[in-house]
Image (tube, rainbow, N blue to C red; front, side, top):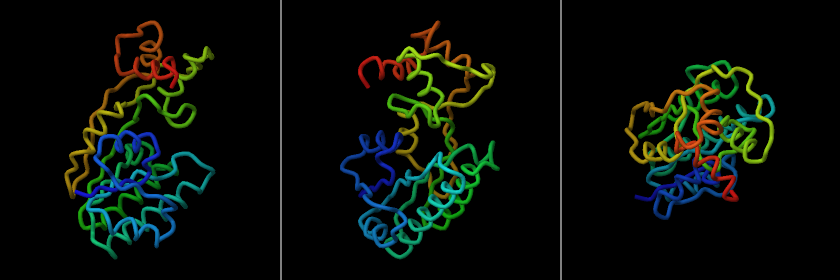
Length: 217
């Protein structure tokens, strides 16, 4: 199967790229319909991972809706490849944020494809995550490894986290015309900090994130 990836340079995309054999990598701007059509015609399945997560107000909506709309339009104009879309649990628990709103609209666009699968994923972490962006684990591991002070506003806050390699395992087995909810692990912010400091070694996946920096990134 000829499999394409958008957003392959991103965190999840980089792991998925390594898992697939000779994937087709989208190069260019997804807002350019001609470029998207050229990409889509060679693909039988597309993992659509490209998109902004944090940006100036209005930019996430403007960019991501345009990009996803072009991808689905191109798929209809070409060969109707399978579309696998990693969405976010923020659609459910933070629907009024720009990111949550954007994802919910993108989901509706993706469902116009002939064959689609939408993954509503929890917080993703793993070696190579981007600190100070959208991952508390990446931020903590960066700060600890660089001798910086870690500030925790509410250590009892809990969230669901999934290790990036476990997520990629799930993405490799899409179920079409379905929403898939990969199961992660519920941890408090305080627990994560403990696993990276006083309880280091008890949580092997979190330790791998810290080792990423100690081993020279």
